[in-house]
Length: 76
Image (cartoon, rainbow, N blue to C red; front, side):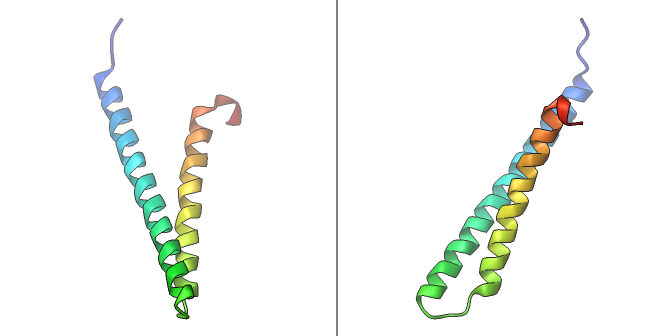
């Protein structure tokens, strides 16, 4: 049995990058939605911040769905 170390390295790098992207999108989305909620409670306009936060959360969800698409062979 021969192990393709280059392919294993590529998989490891892609997994780390995808994890970092997901973590940044999720944490930034939660932060912005939370910040917009606090601003709304203090009678400040925060529609743009809240929309951006939900957009980032949606992108994080799309990253998860894309990962599931790649893992499940019946989907492609």
